[in-house]
Length: 250
Image 1 (spheres, helix red, strand yellow):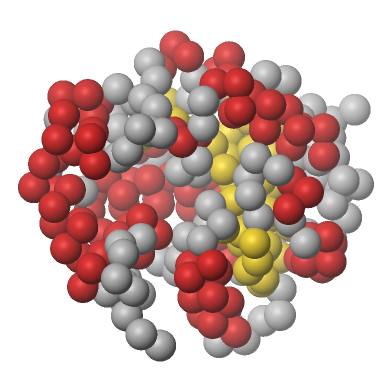
Image 2: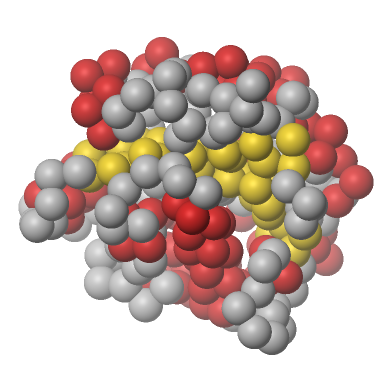
C-alpha cells in the first residue's frame, strides 16, 4: 500500500500515543503543530486515558455493546482493549482510516469488533447489518456511545440535533462519552489556524447545555485528566473537557 501524501488526524494521534500506524507525513504534521503549540503527547495520553476510564465505567454499569464515532486508529487503549468482553462497532468517515481499522481488527482473536463507515451527524449512514451484529440489541438494550473528538467540528445547532437524534435512537439506560475543546488553544493563534475554519472552541459553561436531554453524571463535564482520576491527575493543560451522560432508565 502506497504511503499517503496527506496527514491524518487519526494517525497523528497514533503517533502522539506512541503507536505504530502512522507515516512520515503524519509525523511532519504533528511536528509542525507542536512547533506552534508545544508538546502534545501528554495531552493526548490524558484524553485516551479518559476514554479508558469512561469505557470501564460504562462496562461496570453492565453495558456490553459500544458504538464509536470518529474512531480513528483502534489501538493504544481504544474501546475493545479496555472492555475486551464487550462488542464494539468502530466508525469513521475517512476511507483510509476505515481500511486501516478493518485490517487491524482482522488480526484480532475475537469476532466481536467491527469497523465501518459512519457519519456521527447521521445515524442512518451506519450499516444496519454491522450495527445489529456488533451492537446487539441496538434500540432495545442499553449501549455505550463514544463521541470523542467530534464536538469541536460541529456548530451548536448541528451538535444538539445530532445528540438528540442519538438520544432518540438508544435504549433507556444508555451512556454517552463526550468531550469538548476548551478555549485554551486561543492563546496559540498559529496552532489555532492549523485547525481550520470548522474548529470550534467553547467556554466550559456552554458544554452541559449542548447535551440536551442527555443527563451528565454527578462528575459533571470537567478537564479530562480530572474526570475520575486513577491517582493524581496528569499535569496537562485543560485543552479537553469530558464526561459521561445518560439516557435515564424508564
